[in-house]
Image (tube, rainbow, N blue to C red):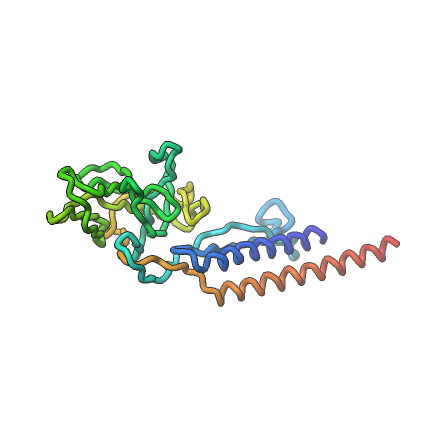
Length: 267
């Protein structure tokens, strides 16, 4: 009995923690809410035994999955503010201490990008954004937009297409392709592991990574001058919070009653 009550309190606290994190990130760019699911516990060591058990022995956290629902589009000034409409994630990596890209890939829907002092495309978390050189190369690399060309002409304009192609204009020259943003696909994005700061990494359950570019088959398109908003519905989350708090409060009262009963019996 005691274990059953404690398991109920534990699962309620876990749900409160998940919902609190969702609420706290309601204003975070491209944040995807998490949903916790729970399973009942029964005595028995086989399905046949469990099926004959009338009373459960508690509950346990089964898993936490990321929602796949896309957030809305928020207009933002700047060509380097990008939102993905449809499937896919931007590919990033945390730089090493010397500034070079690390070998560990991370993935995000947050397209709030900027150029650093060397023209390297960076995320809002200062991660390096990966792409292709635009010259037919198949390997990914960090995207660099030089602030001046070989002739010394300065960068005067930068455009990003819906397919992620980056066109730079130097002086009065015609625009030229300087790179194309890479997009990653996973069969099951809801099973990706959270790394914190709105970044994810692949897991065994998320499936095999597929790399490509925006606009190709199965991949979403890039909308510039916009950012994806969080998909958190505060009304839904507050309702879930109240329900979880009531469950915890109910379990606490049952625990108090159980404790009082045991105390009377042992006097």
